[in-house]
Structures are given as C-alpha cells and as structure tokens.
Image (cartoon, rainbow, N blue to C red):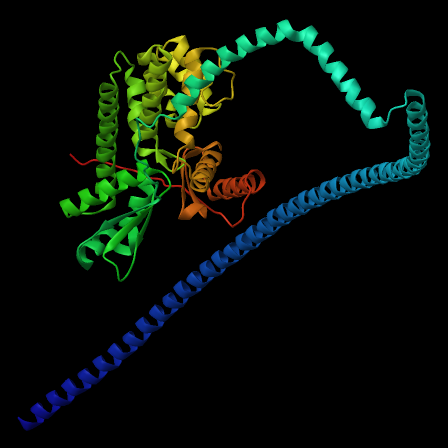
Amino acid sequence: MDMIFVGTLSVFILGLFVGALFFLLYSMLTARKREQSLKKEVNMILNRAKSQSSKIERLSKQNVKEWEEEQKKKLEKQIKLEKQELKDQEYQLKKNQEKLQSEFQIKETELKRAEQELKQEKELLEISQQQLEALKLRTQNEKEQSEKTLEKISMMTKEEAKKELKELFKQNVKKEIFKDLIKMEEDMKKEHEQKAKLLLAQAMTRYSAEVTAERTVETLPISGSFTKGKIIGREGRNIRALEASCGVDLIIGEGQETISISCFDPVRRSIAKKVIEKLMEEGRVHPAFIEEVVEKIRKEFFSEMMEEGKKVCFDMGIHDISPEIVKILGSLKYRFIEGQNLLKYSTEVAYIASLLAGELETNKKTAIRAGLLHSIGLGLPHFMAGSYSFVGSQFCQKQGESVEICQAIACHDGKKPAQSLLDHTLQCAYNLSRSRAGAKRDLLDTYINRLKDLESLANSFDGVKRSFAIQAGQEIRVFVDTFKVVNDKQMTMLSWDIAEKIKREMNLNKEVKVSVIREYRIVEHAR
C-alpha cells in the first residue's frame, strides 16, 4: 500500500515537473515570437517617422528658401525706390540751388546797378546843389541892386512902396467883388442856420444810457467739496465735457468755493452758467446728461433772445419787422462793442436819432427804426463777407426793409458818403453815442476781435466743425469731422497748417497752442 502511494506520488511529481518544463518552454517560445513582432513594429514606426521627418525637413527648407527669396525681392524693390527718391531729391535740390544761385546773381547785379545809379545821382545832386547856391547868391545880389535902383527912381523906401501897393489893391478888389460879397453873406447866413441846428442837437442832454462794462470771466458759487467733485468728475471727464460742449474754459480753485467761467463770447458764458446751475440743481452729472442739458439750455436761451428782441421793438414802437431781424436784435443783448452792451447802445442811437429828427422836422419813426437797426451787422455770423455796416444793410434789404433805411445803415459809419437827410441824422447820432464819456474801451474790443479772428481762421480749414479760443487766446481747440479727418497723420498735418497760418496772418506777441480733437462716437439704443 505504501509502495503504491509512493509510486503514485513519484509519478505525480514527475508529471508536474515535466508539465512545468513544457510550460516554461512554451512561454519562452511565445515571448520570443512576441519580441520579434514588437521589433518589427518598432522598426516600421521608426522608418515611418524617419520618412516623415525627412519630408518635413525638405518642406521646411523649401519654405525657408521661398521666404528668403521673397524678402530679398522686397528688399531690393525698397532699395530701388529709396534710391529713386534720393535721386529725385538730389535733382530737386540741385535745381533749387541753381535757381537760388541765378536769383542771387540777378539780385547782386541789380544791387550793383542801383548802387552805381545812386552814386551818379548823388554826384549830380551835389553839382546841382552847388549850382543852386551860386544861383541863389547871384539872385540875392541882383535883388538888392534892383531894390536900390527902384528906391532911387521912386524916391520911396521899400516899406512905403509895399504899403501904397496894398492900399491900391484893396480898393480895386472891393470894387470888383462887392456884389459877390453880398451873395456870399446870404449863403453864409443859411449855412450858419444849419450849423446852429446841428450844434443844438450836439448840445442835447435829454437822453443818457448806462454804460455796461464788458467782462470775460463769470464767477459762480458752489456749495461744498462734494458738488465740486461732481462737476470735475472722475479723472476730470465731466469738466472736459462741459468745456467741449459750451466752448468755455472752467477754472476751479482748490481752496475756493467758486467756479470761474472764462470765455470772450458772452453768449457762451451765459449758456455755461445756466448749464452748471441746472446740473447742481439736478444733482447728477455725467457727460451724456451734460450734452442733453446743454442742448436744452441752448434752445431756451435762443427763445429768450427772441423774446428780448420783441420787447425792444415793442418799447421802441416799431412794428411790421421780420422775425429774423427780431432774433438778431435779441442776440445783441449778449454782445458788446467798445465796452458797452450792443442792444443798449443801439437803443441809445435810436433815441438820439429820433430827437435829431424832431429838431430837424423829419420822420421820427424812420429815424428811430434806422437807429435801432444800424448795428444789426455785428450780430450776424462771421462767414458773411464785408464790413458790418454793409452786411447789415444787405441783410435788412433781404428782410424787406426800405431802401432809405438800408442806405442809412450802409453809410452810418462814414465809410460811404451820405445821400439823404436820414443818412446825416444817423451819422450824427452814431458819432454822438460813440463820443460821449465812457463809451469806448478800444483795448478790450481789440482783444475780443483777436479771439474771434483766431476762431474764424481755424474754421476756414476743410474738415473743421467748430473751434474755441480759450486761455485768453493762448490756446485754440479745434474739433474736426471724423469722416473728413480719418487718421492721426491728417490731424497732425491740420494742426501744423493751422499753426503756420496763425503765425503768418496774425501779429502774435505770445505762443498759441493748437489742439486738434477728433472724437469717434457710436451710440446704440436697447429697447
């Protein structure tokens, strides 16, 4: 039994050993086959990668070569263009140099010729002067000899002969012009009567008007630093929007509770003051709301000017007048000339013309109408060419005013000769108003005209929408049309052209800063 168990166990162990041996051999054969297949796959992948890398390398070399050739062509083309430009510049420079050389030679020749002619003229002048002195001396001697001879012949001295000749001449003249003297005396009486009426008119003191001094700065009080911060805005955007919309310069001091509105145009100052008051009343300030308020205040302001014009016409007793004329009359309230308010000045001239017409027994209504409208040209836009008297007469003629009144407006300042009694009356009233004490402030008027000329000069360029002269004429801000001035290069050229024209056409005693502003704004509405 034990032998059988031992034999069975031995056979089992031997079988396990043989099976393990066969399994080991099978595993080795399988691993070898797998290793061979893996080597084949790796070789295939490596070959494929090598072919792709060589292909990529070939393509990259080809692209680099093409790029180098293209850049080389571009560089050669650019060098050729620059060489051509350099040749053109050298040719132009040479041409200009030759031109300047020829001009210099011509000028030098002319200068030498002129110098030679001047030298000859000087020599001739010296000779003529010597001859003149000799002739003068000879004439004096001959005169003295003639006087001595005459005294011997007439038995009278020189003074006695002069006296006798004067008496004889007076008697002969009296006989010849006696009738003419009578006629001249009558004419002088008539002329003296007219002069007496004019002197009476000049001596009148029945009317006097207040003198309104002009200012270029408006001061507005503000309450607290919080309101000041709202007006200034984040990084100053609100105050910049106010200055751009109103065309003024705003000055806010750190330790002051006031805003200074600086601008030579009183209309802009008044609009800016009302806008700031409205913003402080509303309590909300931002650029979009500022533009909305400015547009609203501007419409109200022009409506007030219309009402002011109607009131003046009603007070003066003038009817049947064009609404356009009434509108311009209302705008004169915010304009000044030589230190006085234009509307008050016009009413003053109208009243004086009416008084003169009453003294001269002519039509008082026509005189007062002509006096009120004589300065209408000062309220018209600057792009209308001509003097303000000519422009005003043309404007009134288009609005249906009579030829007599238009003629008086055209010649009230003496630039055209007066042709009627109304013309003389208006000229007299105009001169009376200007010559009274306190009526003229030429320096301020010249300063304002200079600022207006600055704006007109900038507005004359194509692409400029509007311009504002600020900082007492030291800076001009120019706003351009975004569709006409499309890039920074055009803006640079425009600012340079404006600066050059200002330098060339205006007599400047200080530097003027030209700021060109281009704003491109897109607005959409979500509904």
